[in-house]
Length: 289
Ligand SMILES: [Zn+2]
Ligand SMILES: [Zn+2]
Image (cartoon, rainbow, N blue to C red):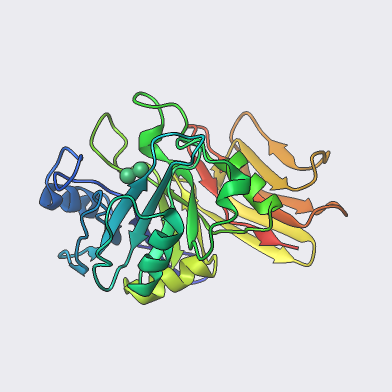
């Protein structure tokens, strides 16, 4: 939990986690304890095809969840859909099409997240056909080195936005306890208390950001976007114009704490990425202009 200088409360959470209930290497109890010790306010245990329960984890909110993975050939479409905050078990069977999984998660009161699209080699035009998704992972820790190599889905997300689909951009660990991905990438959500409905309403309203440590506040005034942040090396304003001479602010000494961007005439959306001296990123969701 973090209270900013305006007195607003931000909750820290991870929405994608595996345990020994599926292919994770630590027990649910040890996993929850680790995240609690690292200052997390909520965690969703999302084992493959195994629905967990929402409960008080003694200082951390355990959100119910499950990851439904379908397909094995990227040409035909591999979709891993995380359902977080389920209010009941949707009783899904392997082989269910992605859209039916998303709809069943919604019917069960859950929040469907498209997991690691870069790792899955998802095609944005095909993924854009999916309706009712709640969010997409822009970064997935376990998909990074040393075990994998496609953790970052920013280009996929921007191509999805070009298709008119503006999903909230979350970062998760997808924890398996393979080699150090735990407690690395998370979301900071503007919510007063760790209540499931409040958390998912804030994510849906893009009242949060994804981060690996840097803190930031992004404000919009018409076509002017401003960022205030903990000291950073770079602030980048991504948009749907391929060229802009003012979209990146860089200081190799890592002293940037404020940056501004005036949207180009051709921009219809902007999102912000910042990076600190330790190579840790934070990502905003889309700001539509
Ligand atoms: Zn997955
Ligand atoms: Zn996973």
